[in-house]
Length: 190
Image (cartoon, rainbow, N blue to C red; front, side, top):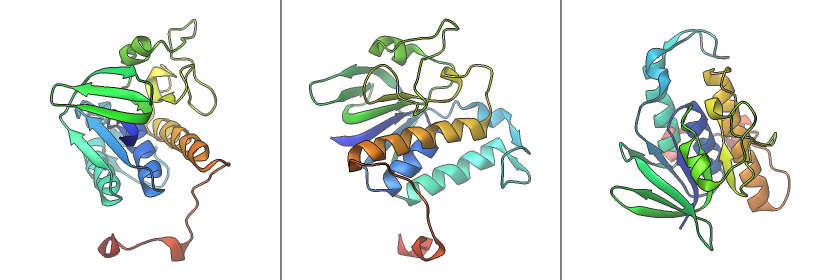
């Protein structure tokens, strides 16, 4: 059983995966590469002067896989259901079990509906400030929770928030991810 299953490989999903895997939680990402980032060019992402959305995605995927996350590129999730021990994530290729699910599917809210998550009057997935839905251990991020705020940096923040909440639950105390220069591994040591 994996600890965290992330459905969607855009900025929110990859950000969640980066934080959880980097901090010791086995994480898988299911990515159909249909992110809106391929139509974007980033001038407004803090720390990045100018980069195409597709180039950003290549770098982000590399960063996430460098930390050990498994990305199931092109493996589309067809269903998610609760089990006694967590969740079952189903694709045409296989079935996966996970303790936590992070939904990062853009405006597509179908999995949140299927799982019975609460929605707002505006038909957005209703989440806490920690991005957790009404279904324990299911998190929703990005455009599905804030339809008119479709910014890569906001979505990445949503993913990071979900990840930090999962890490806090797993570690039994408030968790933050703050690296100092001496903590940063070189790619050669990964």
